[in-house]
Amino acid sequence: MDLGLAERVAVVTGGASGIGRAIAAALIAEGARVYLLDVAEPAELPAGMAGMVHADVREPAAVAAALARVAQAEGGLDVLVNSAGVLGSGGFAEADLAQWRRIEGVNLTGVVVCCQAAIPHLGARRRGRIVNIASVAAFRGGGAVGNVLYGASKAGVVALTLGLARELGPAGITVNAIAPGITPTAMTAAHLGVRRAAAIARRVPLGRLARAEDTAALAAFLASDRAGFISGTVIPVDGGWLAA
Image (cartoon, rainbow, N blue to C red):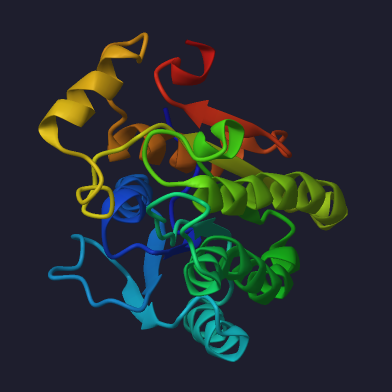
């Protein structure tokens, strides 16, 4: 299927690793010109990457400058994927405000900052796409990996997605979210051992944990012309875990 992404310009936050990197690779495979936005320098840029811009998603001035550089270099911006995220750990009673500020800052404030910086560029072409990476934790108050604070931050992403779809629709911008199931990545490695991962997988109707590529395939579709009349959706990619 031709998704119509050839030469579309995309920025993927948190694209240096994990789900973000898989999304970047999927967009590149469809012919998009992809830039990573991350604080970290990847060990190796994915093949075909258009470039990399460095910024902390919590810093409005830095993000605005980074997106402006991309838009200037490419003559515009078509797609923003908000994939940057951090996990929490431990129980709610033991969590301090520093942990909450870090989780909320990256997972929710970061999405707000990046969307605000991207909207002028996305609206200019009236075909803009925003894809936010939420989590099944938004619907389970944390879930098996992450904690209550993590779930709360991702629930905020869900609410933001619905509101932005309504507000940005007249500008031709679609806004959708993906809620991945538990996905083994470098970020989740500290929380998942072999036995725990196997136990969680047994609770998934399709019998395995999510893969980053599962989320990436849907992200590419939502970024495309094929999904041009889809907006305000939150789609789980969890093998049926929420239904179990």
